[in-house]
Image (cartoon, rainbow, N blue to C red; front, side, top):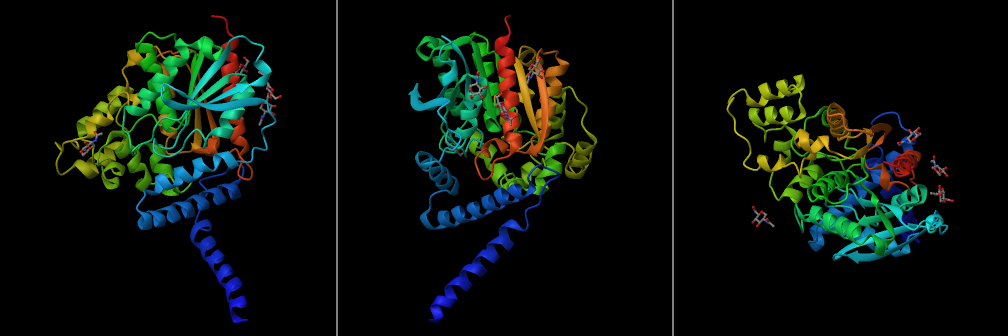
Length: 411
Ligand SMILES: *[C@@H]1O[C@H](CO)[C@@H](O)[C@H](O)[C@H]1NC(C)=O
Ligand SMILES: *[C@@H]1O[C@H](CO)[C@@H](O)[C@H](O)[C@H]1NC(C)=O
Ligand SMILES: *[C@@H]1O[C@H](CO)[C@@H](O)[C@H](O)[C@H]1NC(C)=O
Ligand SMILES: *[C@@H]1O[C@H](CO)[C@@H](O)[C@H](O)[C@H]1NC(C)=O
């Protein structure tokens, strides 16, 4: 009899501990549509991360591999309440890269439809075509364009430039064989969120260098555009919130280390100790800006003892324009295609989006649109019940409108 009473008590205590440990401490970064949903999502991530790290300590498989495997293996069982057959989709390989291809039904009468090649976010080491499936379904539905989502291989199994190379391979094959896919090679768009936004910019520049038909437009959703400077104002404002329980130093330092195969420490990067005074100058001269006051404070704080402090031996790699595309030369940026920049207010990468927009504007690039949404980084993965955010659908709709606006143009 006793054990019957112990079990419910145990469960209640466990739940109370979990709520107190994971959900109560979540700090909502500012006014937003559904703060409670944000708390639930963020607390759940913290819980899942701890569980997967615990598993890692037992079975020895890295926690990100465990998480990716679980999310991907759920795909066949996914309930798709939004799927009323408006968009057909299937998986296939293009040049040995897995892609998920979405074809909207109500445009099948158009002989050659526009296409959006999509690169998912997740810091190059999380995420897949499955984690961004719902968003791509809707993107295809709202635009009437085909969407080809690229399942590039993740770090740390591969490093830069492998994800970029895979993106370029897919884009080139699709453009060269446009009839096979019934897509219009004059209406090719590249889109990506977060690290995928970085890939979209870099892949577009590769294609431009190779004289491939010009990309019609690039859609950058809260993109990661530089890996050099970790004390830009949006980092200073939002790092303390540990957005989604994911955007904090421990996980972020791995984005750079896994992608570039370096061994920076979090302490180094998030105090900018990997930067010399020359590195600061170099960074700001690329942006055509003065060193900011807060940077001057940092410099006197961390560099006063040795004004000639040298860089970390790997810092130069971060300046590579194919890794930090924000820092490319004017000539490269000046010839950028139409660009739709989506920034999230609650995002350590807000400064990336603002600085990129500012540069494109200064160089008079045509058809550059910047919109900021009062929501958090990564929102495009929260489009499913019960944690769907309206802002994610606003972003999909506006992105779709950008694509429709650009394709309707006869230039
Ligand atoms: C296709 O149909 C969907 C749902 O009926 C609609 O939302 C979308 O705007 C349509 N797209 C086009 C290009 O007509
Ligand atoms: C990554 O870096 C390590 C240590 O510096 C090196 O041994 C390894 O060969 C590198 N891997 C690749 C793929 O470059
Ligand atoms: C987005 O656009 C589609 C098609 O125009 C419309 O049906 C849908 O209601 C819009 N959704 C939102 C969230 O505005
Ligand atoms: C699309 O074009 C319409 C009409 O010109 C404009 O109002 C809207 O802001 C444009 N949207 C985007 C995202 O380009």
